[in-house]
Image (cartoon, rainbow, N blue to C red; front, side, top):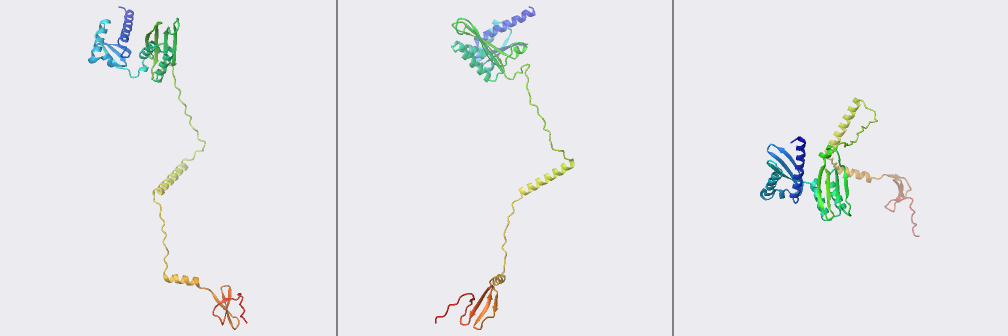
Length: 303
């Protein structure tokens, strides 16, 4: 067999195995497969939403699946491994199968397409494209597309970076094909670039000070900060007022000095005595034993 025929036959076998797994593993949530050649045989990795259904009780289902693949597709010692899909919304085959099931249940195609697109983009996909083709309403078939984000259509990146899934919905008017293409998160799309903000250095307008002046200022600042720290750490001083003690004789002398008044005798008439008490002129009659100001008016004796 030539190399071209060999590649064609491998592609046919891959398509037949995929169709077989879609039919057999529909209840398990089939999400695609990978085939790799090893010295021990052919390694087939199946991705599913519910791997327990594929394995079966005691591994009975997966053993039967392995024997059927070896007989139907002439494979030598096939080994099937099952892996769980953590995020079904980022698996194109699972989303295509869910969309086909929704259309078969009678959900309007626009509502089903928009809901599926929103769920895929909310899961973190960089881009998604949903294409449905067939008889939706009326007698003529048409194509309806739902697109969001970035999507690749041509070249090697479109084959390697884009996850592709296809499913068929069978209705009374005919069959409807559902194709879902997803770019998962974390993929570097060719030609994509990112802008980084440029940092502008600020130029100071203050004149530069000599090195010696700067050192002196730094030392002065350091000393002031040290003094402030010492003042802050030291406890506040308490001021105690000590009363001035005075002896008893001193108190009596002060009291006598305060009470002492200046008395100056001034000569007056024969029947009275006169004196200056401070700034007041007083006199005392001989008949009376008390002093009174001279300015006081005397009462006349009754006749």
